[in-house]
Image (cartoon, rainbow, N blue to C red; front, side, top):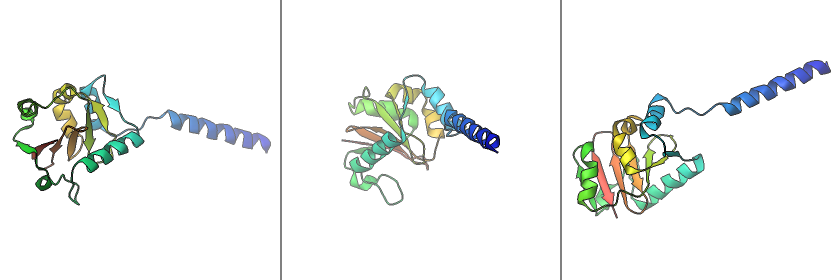
Length: 155
């Protein structure tokens, strides 16, 4: 009998080891987004992701349904097409050299990257989830709402 229990214990340990090696997967679109953003993009831990989400929510007013309440934001501008994001930031003299955080409305981890990488991978980033927020701490947020509206709020 002891031999059987030893073997069972070893099998359980092997299964645990195998499971610990498996990487969390957030789906093909998320993986393609990471590939498009390239080296230098950081996937934040679950705790750090939650911290960034909380910082965004504390910096800007949100509606009960999860959208930024733009009626309560004094410094804002609507952007007609996503390709104009960089031009709009530059026209407002907003520094694009500071790291940004990509936050989705779903349960994906937050990504830290630079603005140029984001612009280069824009379509892949927006394909991951319905609503996407590009947040630059203490500077600005860009909300890409699922109905196509793009709004920039800045401090």
